[in-house]
Image 1: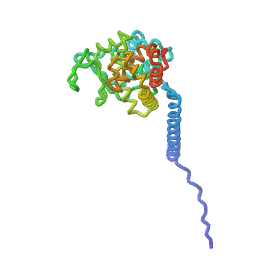
Image 2 (image 1 turned 120 degrees about the vertical axis):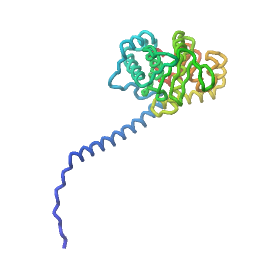
Image 3 (image 1 turned 180 degrees about the vertical axis):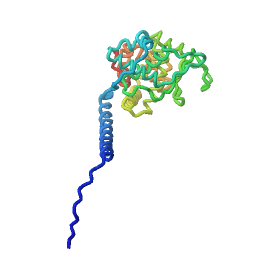
Image 4 (image 1 turned 180 degrees about the horizontal axis):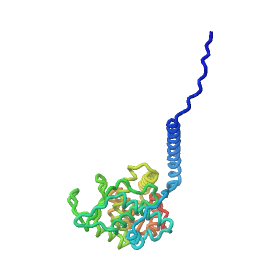
Length: 286
């Protein structure tokens, strides 16, 4: 004989359970969408050599009026940007100042000029990146002039210390790099490029992915083109220090790209385009 048990009405879910389930499904959907977007953007980045988008913040950070005046008066790259991009640039400079610790040595007092110009150098080089704060730098240390380094028992004008995550600069030589704007010698750009290079090797965001891959493309291109390698040396357009190793080569390339882009493009158009794609640098006439 079969016994039928009466059906009990389903117990209503509590509000807590409903909220938990809603959050769970929203979270799962977000993860799936994020992973799909990363996959899609890697394909897009490989094909187009740029992120799907670069500027995505909702609110702009503001510089202090004195800091904004320095940027407006003293930073040529910023002045060449359309107003829309100037606002992005200001936001990023303010964010870099807030994110990094600035320290003066040998009685140097950190000024607004130091904060703005060092930060603007970093933002100029990463302006084509979506993730632009250069995670390999935590602190910026500024000396008045050349300083003695115990690392190799020598005097330095600047260096990037990856272990300490510190960018170290002689202010005298940093300023000189901008006072003479066409000698392809700029301490701030050079040392900042070292930090960006290491950041590109360590990070896995889309801008780092493109930077790393385009530099690999460039080194492979040069390795297969002996005539071009000879021309790089013989023309002496790039100073000899560029040929020390791949890190110094890249730093000198970027210095030259920023300071004399027309000459760079005229002498070495293929390399110029590789550096431009590496930095996703489509601003201010470059």
